[in-house]
Image (spheres, rainbow, N blue to C red):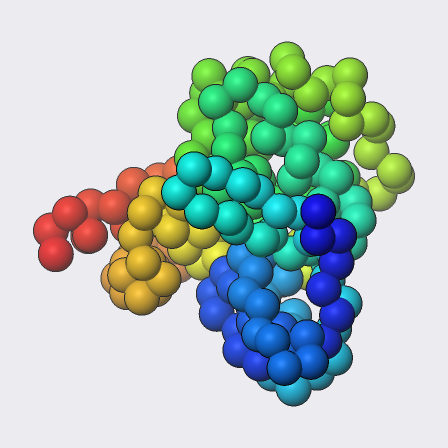
Length: 201
């Protein structure tokens, strides 16, 4: 297993990073908040989780060990794979997820792209005794509101198979809807609207 990667950032995408490990460039998938915090040329050390499937190997990178642990725990839930697990972390900080699961807050959980009400119920049922209690004050993602909804919707679209460029165009197209929604846009509603723009394309 590849436990971590350390090197210089060569490229950053909406949900990917390429790290030069000393002559070898390794691409890893990450959450939008992690990607936004990276800068080309800087030295980084990212913790990783390798997911092996019949159609290929995918390396996922995380800023903290806590995020990697949550990523791996969420994948133990029935019907949830790595893309949805990454969308969970792209939408909620670890303590936000713990709080939502501990309090049966399905409303918060269904805002995660790719998670419906039944999926939210499975998260609560299967993770309640495994995630532990929140560690105190629940810190929200250190992103402005507009960046949070944009990254969440883009992550949802890419998890459904759209390219990063298509996701970016769809996010731009629905921006007026998000502005109208104020400080707490409904991610599920915005994701559906984004899908509709792609279907018309």
